[in-house]
Length: 432
Ligand code: AMP
Ligand code: GLY
Image 1 (cartoon, rainbow, N blue to C red):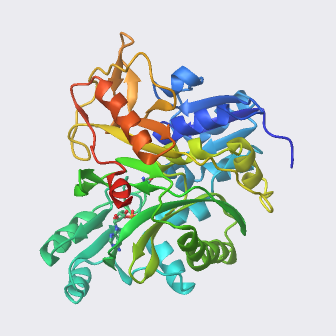
Image 2 (cartoon, protein in one colour; image 1 turned 30 degrees about the horizontal axis):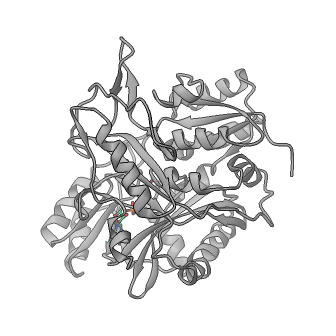
């Protein structure tokens, strides 16, 4: 393999990026790790430079100025705006797909067309630009039914409607979302999709052309409330491994979904070098694709990375250099859980700037990952986003990890803190 980079810039400011920074710093190659723009927690671990994740020119300049040898891009927006294209043009190696690959996340209609063309299992769906046509179609399908904005919508683009009336309202709301984050002049489109029933799992796959490595399995908790109630969020907690994905099922997912997806993307002429995050519904008719994301999941990354024995830097570098063939991943046996602490009110309106006090000492194997945090003018740690922190714990059993995470969640002081109390409960109850 080519020589590992000595300096790495992580782009983004969430919990995923904090987890990436820590895992890259743990590399035996001991790279210098920087972040842009980062957050208050990342700043305790690595220099943070105040360049926004969507400022493509600013990031290329920063990478040049700091002699960065490798850029790891966290969020979807800079990927879809072409950050990796810009870095590559400037001769700076980067991990993450170019804009053509990022379209697999940035356009749900594009993805659905690929899934259908290559006969990869997924729900039946149709695309519309007109509300009247969309409503006529959805009336012809059974409820519940799913309405999706085509473009990126920061986790607010999907409505699982229990009744036709709710679906009609969603058609109008989602058609109002701009087609692209950088333009409001293109007509918006939506996808209307049959509702799949089952358990969900998130599969993170490091892809390099036709080669790929499947990372440890995990499950997210998408809804805001305990027992999967209330609206969808970016993700309220995760655990890994997801034992519902048995080795035999993972084999089937690999054969029916992962291999065909990676091949389809390459056949479409996309040289994808980055994370393909496949959202999968485990239905009675087998695993089906809900969506592709083209980046690490948040908060899946917070539980998947601590379980890697392999060097993350080496893995991501190999993928970016087209050197993934023959790579074997080493994984720890332990269980990991991440409980997200959100600001009360999220995913709707919530306050920012509320003081936050973290425990002064943490048990071994528990870490507090920062997502939406900042320092105010006095240096006080304050909330600065909907998802504020993630408490990640490792244990030899899931129960041990869950108990350790919640013990720390209770000790975090914040007037507006909110978290689900049932992260991991489904898997725990399944166990004898
Ligand atoms: P997506 O961004 O497409 O993954 O959608 C966000 C969430 O909406 C998913 O994680 C699922 O919980 C739910 N969802 C999306 N598509 C469907 C579907 N066809 N049937 C049931 N739930 C869905
Ligand atoms: N946790 C789901 C996502 O990252 O999209």
